[in-house]
Image (cartoon, rainbow, N blue to C red):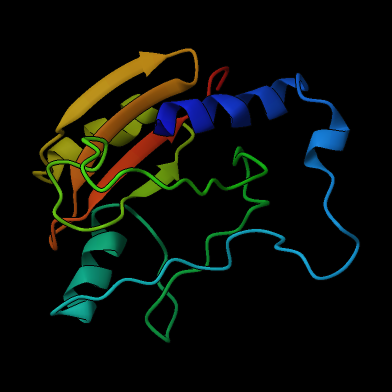
Amino acid sequence: MVRAVILIAVGIFAGSLPSTTLAAPRIGHITGIGGVFVTSKNPKALAKWYRDVLGIKMEEWGGAILRYDAPNHPPMALWNAMRDNSDEIAPSHREFMINFAVDDLNAFVTRLKTRGVTILKQQADETGKFASILDPDGTKIELWQPPGK
């Protein structure tokens, strides 16, 4: 199911969807994802892991700013609801997963392995290249390199 939504996003990259499909009302509408907020028994340790292992720059206030206009970043973010028995999030027991776009999946996976991170799964299809890991709290993280990158 996640792959289907990503495929739609890839269609947006390729310009295969008519622009009217993407049109939104002039006022009073969602413009994108404003943040991802998670709970943790040890938020500081979790933020340190995201900084040290994934390379996400943490701000003084303890979180990160992930910009849409970062170099090589897709110009969108996805939201998708899945059935509660979906295997897309397994082996995580959380009710969500995080998908981060990366510029070079092979280089990123190599860096993760040097830090002792277990790669749960790697695959590629028409929507891009993917690798899955778990963070220290057991949240599944999917790393995605869009096609053509």
